[in-house]
Length: 404
Image 1 (cartoon, rainbow, N blue to C red):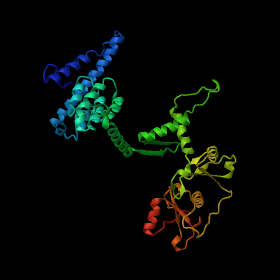
Image 2 (image 1 turned 180 degrees about the vertical axis):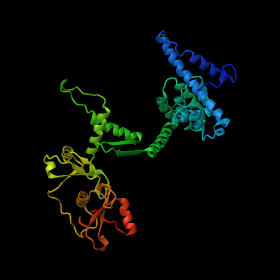
Image 3 (image 1 turned 45 degrees about the vertical axis):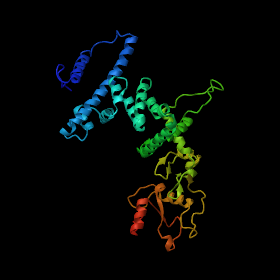
Image 4 (image 1 turned 60 degrees about the horizontal axis):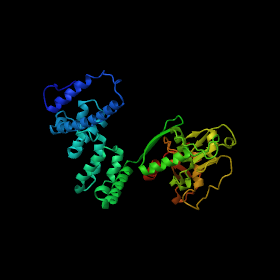
């Protein structure tokens, strides 16, 4: 990007920045080896303050650009989009710059402190957010107090102080104010909570999640307990513990163990059964054979893992050629029993509508001969259908041709 202002002409601030830019680039090759400890420390502090001052000046310039409708002059939808056309910055950078401009334009104390280098950009945004949550009569005093505290606390600590600011300026209302802020924060967190996962067909499942902080803390504590228990070191004797921080791999293995350990009798029903994974294997596999086993979710697993899972709570090993419960209850009840559901899932494995491969674990059990019309509740007259095709079947009254 080329300079757009002559260092000797124009608005005083434009001239100042142009000269500063010229002088600074003129020292690009100036070595720093001669700086001692004190000078190096002072240089870094000054640079942080200058950066804050420049961020405030940038915010004012963005505000002026909006006043002149420069974004509209080129058809940009927002000041952020216009700024991205002007300089090659990321959307996130542009959004933060334009948001800071809006915030400083309405909070004069914070703007002046930022211009003087006493408040960094992230601190300024925390101060503005905390002040805006207060009643109007408290805002000026709170802003002044938080600006003073910015000299001693980073943005994260300043946010905590902002939440408890009324303890300083209005102690009687502090607890009510913090409770209201926490409730609002938790409500926002619930709206942003998400979980997504997918298989890569190479033996791994990947995912991303966003949790409220409280539940995130619970998960972190549980996984840490599984990943890094206080095992006594045999070489050091009793009373010596290993407090090593768990690695991502150990946390991943702990998460897998956490999933296996969760008691399935506490899960809601899924397709008529507790959300329990069923492992199907031949008797020979259980006794040490090498044939792969299958999960009712459509995944194949090694015989070694199948034997291990067969010993774990929450996993039901369905051993073929062995004894089983009585599955045909005839007309004694309408809905299929859990034992019947398991047997049907083992035989049909997925939705029976041609072209649909939804695993049995996520399907409904459908009577091929309607129960209302005298059909039996057994495994022979039952077909698995995914929720979509099951609903479609009942809505149209026409059954799809079954798989053979």
